[in-house]
Length: 203
Image 1 (cartoon, one colour):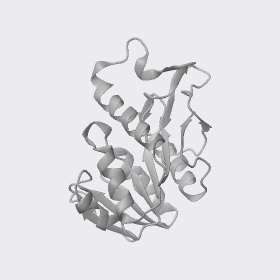
Image 2 (cartoon, helix red, strand yellow):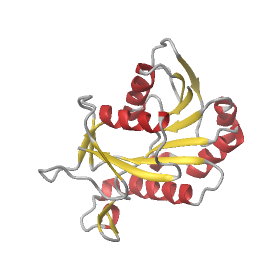
Image 3 (cartoon, helix red, strand yellow):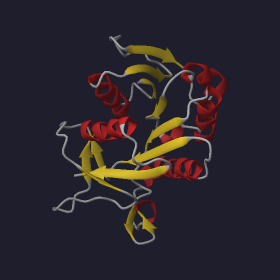
């Protein structure tokens, strides 16, 4: 497939790139500054501001899907969605956040007592992005939320999928490596099971 990956230089974006290339996909990697990435077969690098649809849309045209690995706090979700539509690409897959997952019936992690103030701007941005997608009628979108602990680690290929509830393991931990998250993300790209849905992944 021909994939446009926005946020290719970030921690999650770089792991998505590795998983996509491992499986033979052709990737256009997009970021404000792609200079720190080395060229490699099957990868084309483009500099663009995702908040400027007129600049971004031409770079997305002709791709089978757009993948967003951007930080929510610094992303204009409406502008990104507009650029994907202008480009005529139907599929948009978004690296989500954990804060909108339920920790109890009707209560999401973001609204739980003691949610860290430092994470609130990013979490609120994620909620706004997901709300926009849930009202979207043109794009075939998917939003994959990671668990609470989401760091670089091992690529094991062993994990569970969920829907709107925060996943925890037998020890009460909610976690996954970015490498295993990338597997679940690209699995969804290749064999869609969550069209116009949010889902989650964890150990």
